[in-house]
Image (tube, rainbow, N blue to C red; front, side, top):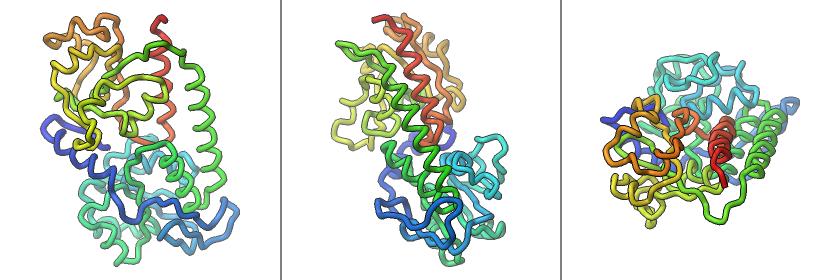
Length: 310
């Protein structure tokens, strides 16, 4: 998910909800052919076949960019979209993942394009130009994230390193989960996507990470039927009545929200999260992506829980 502004936030959420159900040349459960970095090409993942190891990769997804660099394909990446800001040495360009332009992409002569959304029918356009496209749609589970990293490793000739990254993630997450204290009554939370009080339920990817930490989401009843795609907008009254133990802010960079601005909101001073100083300022980027840094997100959540007395 890209950086948001208040004026376009509601629309961005609607698009994000659609993205969760997107389908095209994306990851599948079908077995992939090919192997590690010492395995010869061609390799096939789903409907994508590469005759040779790609050396001019373009990434139009911040999450995919992080995955590519994590699995060791960084030296093969020649350009990333204008929202890919991590790692710092990623070759940022003016290419857009929101409004992809086939002509601009083709001008860089890529041998693999990785993107999340099939906007402007970009997949068909690039396929017509004989440019291979691998799609990494927004995930809903960690297993889907692991699969994308694994398949990116295969496609780029870095399968062994990708497998190592996935295993480290699994081990780190298991260790963090084991450190969460058992409670008779689960702690509750509100995850803020924007100051308009949009949030995410437990059925979303971000919600599943909180569930790993044993937290209860106050937003779940607001989208029990799933009509909001897991991203309902709560009223202030609902939040005040729910009185969450934690407030996690993922609108710090985009919307200048922080603990001080939350405490200054009318009617919020009596909330447990406010009174107990349990307002957690997240990194917007880490909280909206599904690459290897999800471990850092879970660590932040677990560390916050550890500070609460039994």
